[in-house]
Length: 342
Image 1 (cartoon, rainbow, N blue to C red):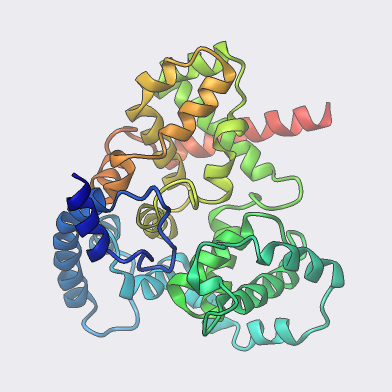
Image 2: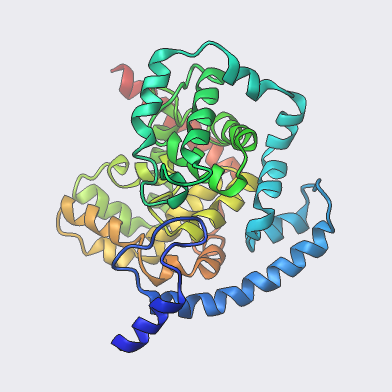
């Protein structure tokens, strides 16, 4: 066993394709086995995408594209498809020079200070963010966050946004595209997640609770029995869009769908994690147990195998019509507002 693992470790790079250094507990052998299957999928998808795009720089949203997106966007096409499907490309074209003008404007010293505090905490395990990297993405990260803070002063900057901007830069390698994708996420896909009151985030955590109550009642009962608030176990899922919660490739596959289909995808992922692991969650005997089990369900083969995991998110939670979400959001929003006012 040792020797095979040693060989796998020799063959697999200790830095992943996105620049993250693998942890010392990383299972190289399991990864190599997983990738031998996933690379076949990636190659097949890559050929199909190349045929679909045929060198085009514009794509139309349609049933075929949605199906392709759900099966994963090859990394070389991610920036193009994310920009097109999220509406970020339209915004970029409608507002030429806007990003540069934000960078050139007078900067709020408080905003600068808050952003600078978080720069070194953003992906210290990623070689592209280290000071020695050339180019070092830290400067680009600072620019994107600063520009966004001035573009949307109601939000400014809050923790979590640094990780999102960081992932966008890793994929697009382009500040302006990252800025407009950030605007699509924070402005329309996840409204009110990052505003000072975080009303949208609190509302969606409540909505998730209501969905669990109907779809996975055993888990809902466990949460109720041990008096666990949803925010305790899922706030990081929502605010970081699963960054540092699930494996990188799985997160990117979730984002492929998030930019196309909107925030409904976050509920599908959360419900699938709980539905698939409901027996484990229900074993909890106390609040700390519940928290520990929620950490456990974001690791292991089920989430590592991103292709099958992504198929499951469209099957396990069952039907999730937008009308249902809209209705639940209205109810939960009123509840959150009432609680904050009381």
